[in-house]
Amino acid sequence: MRNFRKKTASVEEKFAKYMMDVLQKSGVEEVDEQVLEKAATGSVESFAEKMGLQVAEHVLRDRRTYRVNHKLDEGFNKRLRRRYDAAFKAFTISTACAREAGESIALKSSKSLSADGTAAFEALVRIHAKSCRVAGEVLALLKNGFPEGALARCRTLHEMAVVAGAIGDSVDDVDNSDLAARYLDHEVVTQRRSALQYQKDHRFLGMEPLDQNFLDLIERRYNAAISKYGKDFKGEYGWAKKYCPNDNLRGLEEKVQMGHMRGYYQMASNEVHSGARGLSLNSSEFRGELLMRVGKTNVGLEVPASMALNSLYQTTVMLLIKGLPQGADLTSLVTMKALDEVRGRAAQLFLDVSLAIERDEERFGGKRNS
Image (cartoon, rainbow, N blue to C red):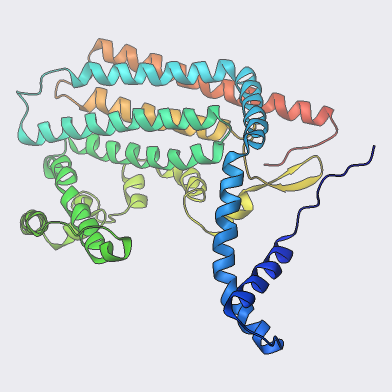
């Protein structure tokens, strides 16, 4: 049977009709090349706006496209979670144990601590709490097939582990016992910078300006901090200048003996920044073809999983050992040993799945190079 389905006009054909309607409505009697060119130039924007609205309405009502894509998405997720089931469970258990360990310290009284000790306790508890949350974000991204996105969050986890290491290291350092207080007080430096930037751009954003009383308050707090700690406090890591003269993340990494993670941090940074190296890493060889990744994948989960678990473990250990002056008790020591074992097994499970996928691909005659 012949298909008598009506042929859909192309965008160019619709534009030609639209332009002729414009000319007729304008009352032009003679149409030459110049008139056509002028009409076309003047009609493009209004035509594009009209057609753009129509296309948007159409695609938003197109339930079939949504159903097809949703079905593909859910099918991938089911297969991914089936293959990584044990690894995901181990990751969940590891983060749950870390969270419970942190809660046990956070609920203890800090009333007897000195001002510097209280600041260290507060900083380590808050860093650990955020680390637990970010680790959960890593797991959510891994469960949905986005290891590169998870790697970007691992960058944050690594930075927090480094800062926790520095604060923990300074607790027993007489010359730098105020490092945690400096770290917490440095918030006003970032807050002022953000407020001034917003105040500069609010008109372009179509937003209301910040209240002047609020800006004045920030400025007073900022000036008080600079007066207390000196001009070096203005820098991004100005809070650490006294503790680490090379006051940047690389300097802090070396100071707390985490410099060996620099390579992984740089790799994670490629998923945060827009450099060309990040574009290269977004391609992988699959069965003889070089493909650009535009969606989900079932490979590469082992690196962010291991990196996240290691960073969370480090922030947890710092809290357990340095959060309170009496240090780690027997319960904390047992907890640390258990956490170390669980995170190691979880990381190995991710690696085992990655190797199994690689073997499967080799059996199909392809070789994966991610």
